[in-house]
Length: 115
Length: 118
Image 1 (spheres, rainbow over the protein chains, first blue to last red):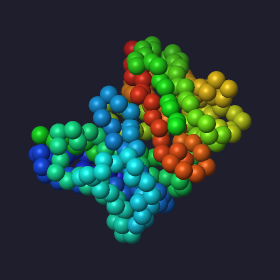
Image 2: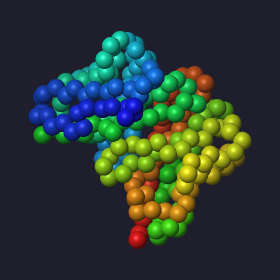
Image 3: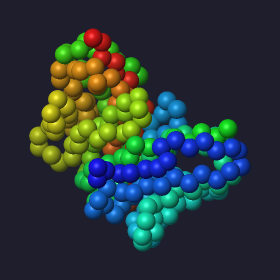
Image 4: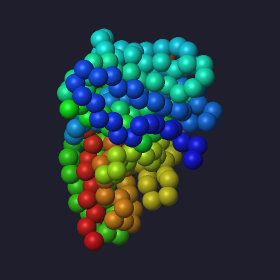
């Protein structure tokens, strides 16, 4: 399966712990995006990365959230000191280009539950 | 700013019948792309179909077709010969512009829950 790979699929964290979500883009794709889906909502953009660069993080909360896409290895979305409101599905997506004509493919999502 | 509106929170369709899921959009960009995704109860987001704003013909992918009416700013998804496995949430989304945030960010609607009745 050469699709977008995310892990873990499900993650439970206690309030105050850290959550790390990993994403490997589709083969040949160098553009990675993270989206968050709250219950009964559509997906909301968080951050757009290319290798070693954050292009746009305007959708990401200013505190506790960070993202990276290193030269080697998967993209990581890191949430420090999680709170109950962080409980959501986090989707990673990738594309071969960053313009409106490029199809974006999503991973299966990572469901974070904060208890 | 880009906006996607899906006015049908839920839809029912009889198995083997066709169904249309509505989507209207608002953008000032002359170049944009429209997408439909399916989210079954298992949670993954599955790409279904794409329509570019300059495409002359409506997009089709198997049983899925996109009824693109540019002047009305609508991009309705048509599913023919519905199957039980089509029961899912369906999201319409768009990217717009040749540069800037709109060109790479997807803006999603709130979704339509489709239930296929045997």
